[in-house]
Image 1 (cartoon, rainbow, N blue to C red):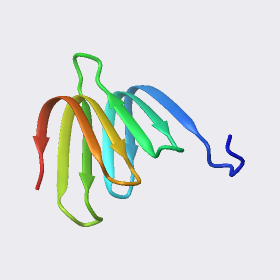
Image 2 (image 1 turned 45 degrees about the vertical axis):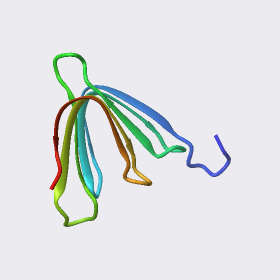
Image 3 (image 1 turned 30 degrees about the horizontal axis):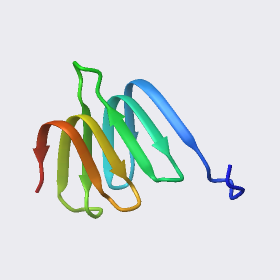
Image 4 (image 1 turned 120 degrees about the horizontal axis):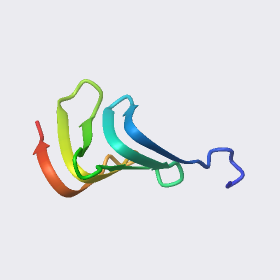
Length: 89
């Protein structure tokens, strides 16, 4: 804990879905670090990780399907490892 009451590390497994104002993510496994504002989505070999996000609310969606996706919520930066499909509008 950093003393500000906002430190959190989360992990979830088995068909996880996360929805935010400008993104939706699905993956067999996810971890999240509040301090880094980093969401890590991981596939399991059969099922990939999916991220659908908008640059701004109401804008077009970009779609990412990969074995592993790192998404920094604070900056909107996405890093894709072993991509299966990418679509950007």
